[in-house]
Length: 249
Image (cartoon, rainbow, N blue to C red):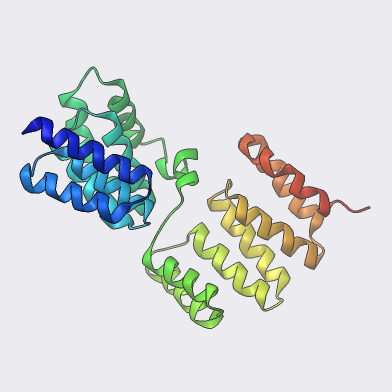
C-alpha cells in the first residue's frame, strides 16, 4: 500500500513540475482518499494552490500538512510563507510552538518559531515577508478593476481596505496608479512613496515612483529615496540602472 502511494506521489509531483495541475490534484486526492493522514499529499496540494494564487487554500493545506507531520522543515516553511502572505502568523503560533517542542533538534523549525515569537522582531517587515508581499480580497478586487480600466471602482476597493483593515503597501500603490492615470502626478508620487515606506523592496513600486517623479519634477527626491533605501536593502541594486533617466543632464 505504502509503495503504491509513493508511486502516486511521484506521479503527482512530476505533473506539478509540468504545471499539469488538474491531473496532479486528481492523483493527490486519490492518495488522501486511501490515506487521509498522508501529510505530503496536503503539502503538494498546497503547492498547487500557491502556484494558482489560491492563497487561503494554500494556507489551509500547508497547515494541515504541518499538523499531520510537524517534523519537516519544508512543510513548516511553506506554512510560514502562506501565513506571511495572508498576515496570519498569529494563527500559526501554537502550531509552530508544538513543532518546536516535538522536534528540539530541528534547527530549521526552531529558527521559524524564534522568528515569529521574538517581540522585538516585526516578522512582517522581514525581507522574506516583504518579498512575498501581502494579499487581501479587497486588494485583489482593486487590482482587477485597474486592469479593466475601472478606476473609480478600484479607488473604492482600496479605500474600503484602508478603512476596514488598515494601510498597506499594495493599496497605496494601487491608489497611486489611479492618480497617475488621472494625471495627478504629484499625488501619485506621494502615494508610491507611502507604499515604499511600508514595503521598501518592491521593485514595481519603485518604477512607478520613478515614472511619477519624472512627470512632476521630483527626480531629485526619487533619487534620494532610492539611495537611502538601497543602503538598507542592497537587493535594490538590481534596479539602479532604472534611475539613470531621472538624472538631469
